[in-house]
Structures are given as C-alpha cells and as structure tokens.
Image 1 (cartoon, rainbow, N blue to C red):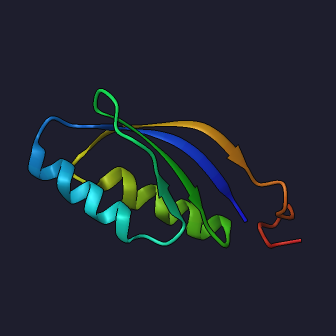
Image 2: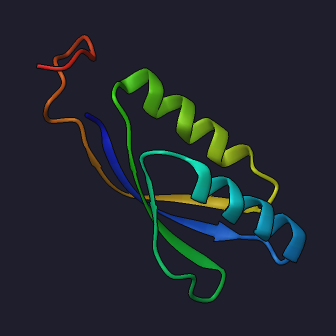
Image 3: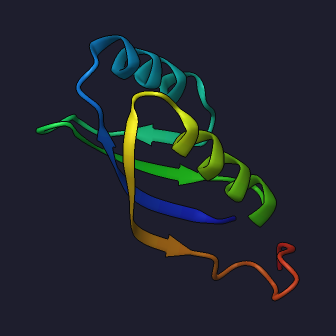
Length: 85
C-alpha cells in the first residue's frame, strides 16, 4: 500500500480553496491536517502504485492547489512490479 505525506500549498481564491477542501474530505484514503498559512498537510494511502499516481495527478489538477510538496513516500510493501507483497 503506497503511503505519501505531502503539503498542499493552497491558492488565495476562497472558492477554489473550498472546492479543494470538499474534494479532499470526500476522498477515501486521504487524511487532512490543519491549514496553516495556506499550507495543508495531508496523508495519502492507496491500494496500488497506479491508484497512487492517479490520486496525485487528480490532486495536482484541483483549482485550489498552487503547489504540491512531497515530504514522505513509503512503497516498502510493494514488489518491483508494483503489486502487493
């Protein structure tokens, strides 16, 4: 199970920020921390590397996200092919 820790840098538009926060709260496998100075810590977990990539791509495309900063990544339980061990 891929697990990522990241910081989302939010834009200044309140409508875009709210859309991003609503999306995050509706997503399984996403844990959201407290926003500080337009930065939002998140933990992302998924069932596969492909699902992880899709989640990261969707997150980066949200209008309220100005930048994603990866802080931690753990793929230790995946084989080289990306399948669970």
